[in-house]
Image 1 (tube, one colour):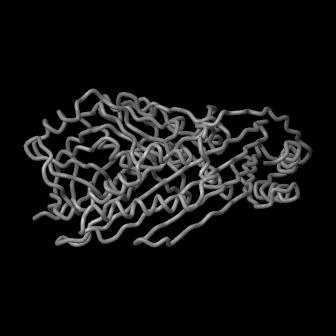
Image 2: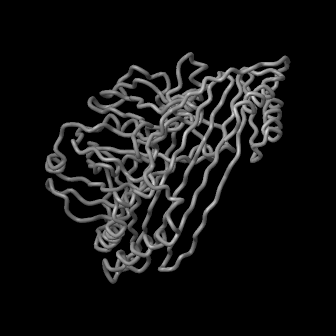
Length: 463
């Protein structure tokens, strides 16, 4: 993407007026998308975003500049601007000797989506639309979307690192609205992996559409959700977002460093029920948060954050790890070359336990079974959260009974960790997600086995 000799001169320019560290992050991202709404193709786009971000660190100050001009002149100008922002004086010339670190891609793509005609992408959407509408006359709206991207990056820094990555992601989503006596109800299903067009060898879009339609239609006959404290059973793959939002962010070293985490200073303490182990794993091949290197050039890792209930470590990016005299955990990520990296999750999940999922339900006298959680709000400093339940059912006398609607889960992430009293043996990853933090969005995955929280507040509307 950029000649090695140019990289060396640009880094030299970045450090010419003094600096402890300089880095070039170059990115070339191509993407395409298609949207079918109510049977009509509403959007068919493709684009390319290419440029570089340069940061210079002087003491506690970071200067950053980005440019879409990858010529030596453009990069040098950005380097000088970043240096000016971080400058503390000094002078002289600093030469960087690179050690190229070739990292094999996390996954070898079989068919690049860019090689697939747009007509085939639209055909997927049409098939999904027809399958969803065939699920029942109550289906009144269908929206299906497709997206793919190929992101190639180069990372070079004044420590002599020179490396890169090439990640392809493919995504498919279908949303359905059904209309009946209870008004309009929605159902959604999405799949996304760090793979190419072969995603559709793994998934049948018509089956995905029928699943989304079933969710919407089921809620037409749903009862209003109950309210109050009760046991909540979360299905495998269906509730990982709760632990990502309400617990995972509190384990990011930048928030810990700012004192904005309830987990600050608690390494070595029992912070969850015994048997609860939480992992953040960027090496999970084909999962949505998978990559070979992070956006600072550090190889992705499998990091155990909580083991058997004991807090073992936080997630780290390069600069915060360096300040603490330790290695990065491979969690330095950024939305694009126009952004600075920060600590971010990858694929975050709870390990499976030994319990039979059917036994977990059978041993729950009365409660709620959450098949899928939706979006929510979280205070990352305290872990307090509210999440909507997009598919949920009552548990009565140890059996899953009626579907429920219009319900929320309200609680505190760290408290939930201590109230998990059953872990199933049926771990599954959930749908792909985008994690937002400080205005930046990055792809992430999450997963859980079937698990039970002994007591959690359900916010419903039932009388």
